[in-house]
Length: 405
Image 1 (tube, helix red, strand yellow):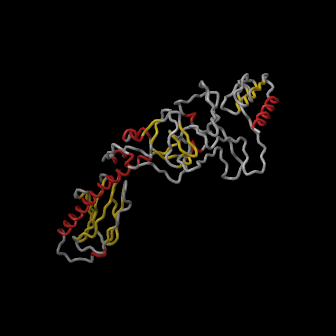
Image 2: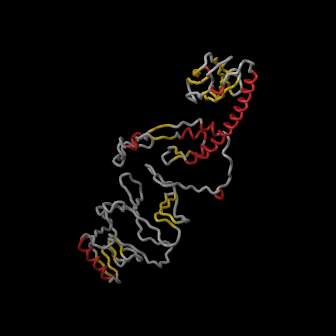
Image 3: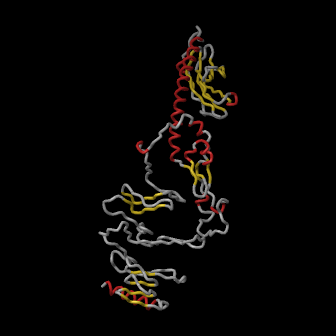
């Protein structure tokens, strides 16, 4: 059956390729354009002794080594080409299909594809240009890819895809989660990040920006390059706003997060910025705790001072007096403090203190009832302040307000 198939293939080749003038059959091997065929069937060359069939053409006008057109039937699967190798082969490397598209010299006028595949118009969601599946009970990957600097590697685990080398995507990557190896046993030379992360982060500026189109890049751009493979200038990729950081700014404070791509542009690892944010929050919390303790101490001193101001004048019903939180808070320019003092027998005032306990502003409340005062931000330096309401020598309440720069 095998010999019959080879004979039919040879006959077909003779009829369809008349340019070959030499036909040779020797020792059970059939050759066209081959003086001494080495393969059972050789077309255009002697072939190889370890190949069943070999096809070669030196004619530059013939750009397909083998073309197969298959008329589908009603089977579950239809294949243009079926390739398999013995399951019990003892070869070191076994490949169902080996394909190469490679030039000995560089050129800018030719595309090369190791494998080029199309798929479409099948059932929605079930169209794949390339499909790879790992079978059996051994570790590996359904699809493996590596760059020119790497080669095969032992894949520990069972993965749909495994890439050795950098992977670049022009658009968004959709994933349900991201996992980064972070076990302590994988790390060495471990050191603390440092204690000045707030000041470092203050040097960074969050920005809104748009991506430049390749034709707008002066670096590595050749005006004679083919632009048909680029998206148009008005594509959403180049018109929508994005939020990010400037890699050059990050490089000044966290050089470990910045790299460089093959074209010389800086890259930024946003994920590894998280530890710096965590440390900054911890530093800020220490400052907040210290300020809170200081505020509590000052508030106690203010209450003590207020009690010293009490007189022997008839006391009023102070339980109805109120001091409200300033609005807005924090504030940039001006802020309003509202109060309610139903009755004043001697005096009432609103005082403002800084965190050192020094009084910076004082307002007299001349009339009883509801009222408000405005505090201009221009009269204070940015910071945290304590203000209180004192009626007839008694502190009614104290509150905190923040003026920001």
